Length: 404
Ligand SMILES: *Cc1c(COP(=O)(O)O)cnc(C)c1O
Image (tube, rainbow, N blue to C red; front, top):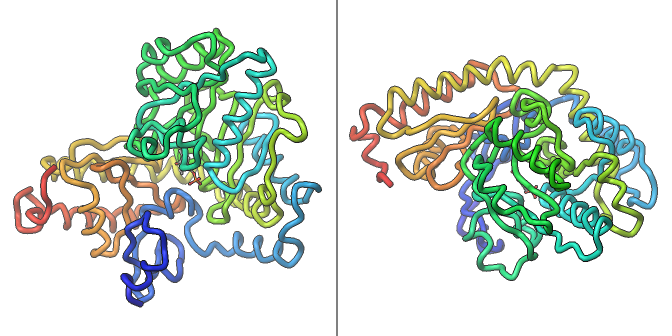
């Protein structure tokens, strides 16, 4: 199929040049039969890799029973899934959505309603972080810390100010009596793979407690075992008031959720929020299967076993190609490699060598592989990266790259 011809029928917001037709384990196959090692997992979604038999069977069984009923009734998979989510998060109540963005919308609405009940004149101020990413809808965009994503779509929702991530003083400086929520990713993804420092996140938690502000953590990307715990905040001994999740929650079936503590959740009453599809039987059957497979296969245990190996191999590459690779950072299987060249060029070169990488920001490669990845796959990835970065910088292969 001719890519240019196909592209004509789509609104052009992505630059795409590949068609994948099937997946198996940690590999994707294109329409020409090419096999690709996937270090992107569909942007941190396909945590169980591709074509997991148990997962597929769970979906098939649910399709045979019931796909949709609307939220005017309970459905069995959602009851079970709500139990799994509340147990894994330590929060009390959950609302299922169709995407991460919608989970953010719900979280913002819940925070605003909570503030409104405390004070009808509340201005519902929200402090968000620079370089954050929370989604593309008008609400989620309003708290996204990248100016060029926001600007063309203004005016967005009001009352949002931006602090510097990992700078507690910058957050304190923005707190007013109108502040109802502080929203941030526990580990910034899109913005360049920056984990919250312990000092920062525990400081923000304390700041929230002292000022009656709700802490909203966005774990849409870093949650669901990716950092070696089910949720990244569990590394820091703190808990959010509201949590958003999506991506690996359904491992491919579109589903997200926001969860909250009882005290906060009770601010919402019938009529305040809703969704036609959210948490439908098919989506929540996927959520149930995901939690069950995580438990059976000890997915977080596996992450803790292979993640240090991925990190050490990336560090090895950094040593070897120190003019191209400036930094390696992250947590678990959510790692970033900062380059001195545009990441897009490295991603393109990797794809030519049957390795799928995704970027974060302009010069960072983001490693978010399926969580079932093994050391042998990491070695294969290493060899491809070693080849495309070549040694030393300035060699024939590396000259293809234009330094930033
Ligand atoms: C992907 C992502 C979102 C948006 O999720 P969608 O499912 O694309 O709507 C929000 N926040 C974070 C941290 C994300 O990584």
